[in-house]
Image 1 (cartoon, rainbow, N blue to C red):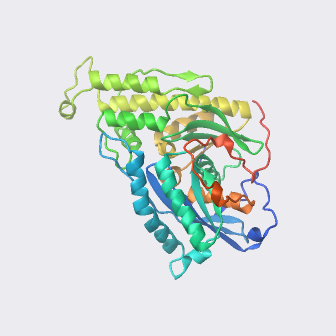
Image 2: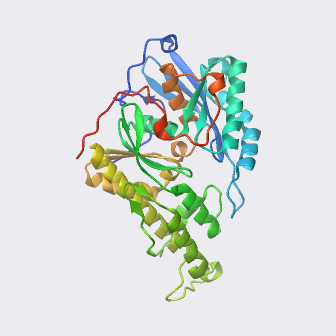
Image 3: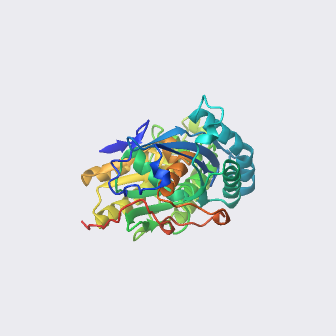
Length: 395
């Protein structure tokens, strides 16, 4: 069974592990509006989110974003990405407010707090967005809330899909983690010991000349769907609860450089009967291998924690093949897969607003002198003050 993200206002009632909101000036208001700014990688986004006290719902009022797309064969570098974010973030703030409050001449008056990504991510882009958040806080005289990027993904996923206490597979360009919640921390059960899965896919896409538009991972997914794609055996590297992708990447890059059939020959149907392989073969094989590794360690975490829900978050979580493979495993265990599409999986401002409003409602504010950003900020470093303590039940 698969649970999909819903549109419109999301009720917080399914989140049985969340604590009741404390009595405070913040929570006495009928509505609470926060603005979230995300810019940890090549996407910069601004989201406006509203909490309605009367029906206990959270609603995304607007969520525009811009993506820095590097030329084919190149990755996005911190300096150019930071310039991109600086050029677009002010316009995105204006657009987000206009979409959220279209008939209001002073939409900023509705905003109760500014939430921003503290880390992890790329230094230059993070700093660019933090400067914007500080400036808005001073201009509008509202508090700041620093948010862990990874926690933002998880809280957006939990609310959008109604997952109360799932095992989380977090897969993106910079992170690969299997996570479960206990005692107000998102505990990391397993992770990559070298490069993230998104980084592995992006680098392979550059080797075989796939475009970065809309994203390398999406183009690999489409290439893998082509009719006639054949599986090529690749290394399979699971080490306990951890995974390793760098050796697999080296191996598949070598295959691409030595055995890949030329594009012209592939279009003409000319494929050497023994040694040559196509882009589709390599993309299909790489996906199948990497995703099988992720399914294995996720199942092991489910057994350890006694959970029957899996939530996939992060940009790579959009991949339909990953969702299908995970759904098969979860269904065999009598569980539910909670999956989302590009609106919520890919980095966006609303996810920062979502984790930020939870923290804000529990009085977790960030002093101006503490609004520095960090490239290293592990998921388990953040205290999740809005959730009840939970114990694992081994199966």
